[in-house]
Amino acid sequence: MLAALGAWLGWKMLPVIVLLSSLVGAVVGIALIILAKRGRDIPMPFGPYLAAAGLLTLLYGRPLAQTFLGFP
Figure 1 (cartoon, rainbow, N blue to C red):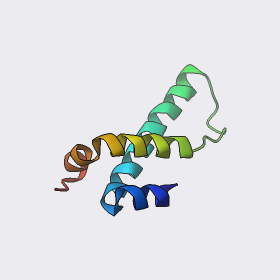
Figure 2 (cartoon, rainbow, N blue to C red):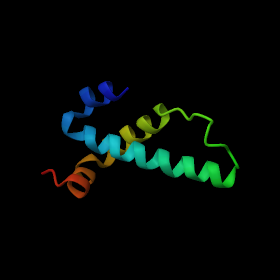
Figure 3 (spheres, helix red, strand yellow):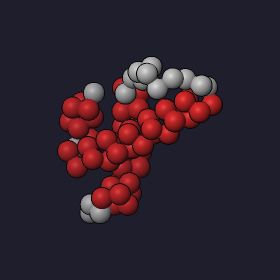
Figure 4 (cartoon, rainbow, N blue to C red):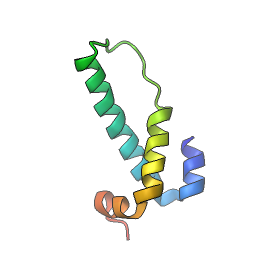
């Protein structure tokens, strides 16, 4: 999925996608552990977070890249 997003959005957006997907996955994972009493040993799929980050990058990619990474 990451390769498809890189081919579609360009290689300069890959760091933004990885950063956003990791950030959103961490927030959701911590919220599930705290609020739903879900154990840390239960795996979470990473694909939905990659897809959500791809959508956010498609909509707001240039401003996010400039903010996070300083890309022109």
